[in-house]
Amino acid sequence: MPIIKSAIKRMKQTIKRNERNVGIKKDIKTANKAFAAKPTADTASKAQSELDKAVKKGLIKKGTANRRKAAIARTAKEAGVKPATAKKAAAKTTTAKPAAKKAPATKAAPKKAVAAKPAAKPIAKKAPAKKPAAKKTTK
Image (cartoon, rainbow, N blue to C red):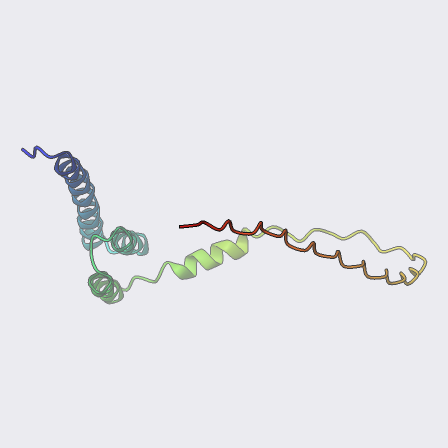
């Protein structure tokens, strides 16, 4: 057991980080197993999302995540799974709200040209306050 206060704190931090890292790795593995069992667009998206989260947390490197995501995409393509992005785009267009109707324009008198306001006079800056002369010391 550490005796120094900073070492005790460091040990507590290590335990917390270890628990978080194990949890994230477990989430990645379960998502990959779910995709392997039933390759669908949702499971592929979930597995890739878990890898992105791990990169964001600093648990795995970006290249490792990209390699694993490419393997998931390759497997999905071989299984004939369509990407989920096409479904999301179609869902957005069907649920879009209709445009608000504009009130019919009425004939209004043309607006008069507004005369340009004269520019405000710039405020003069105050001169900096003079500092008192330094006192001379005699030796």
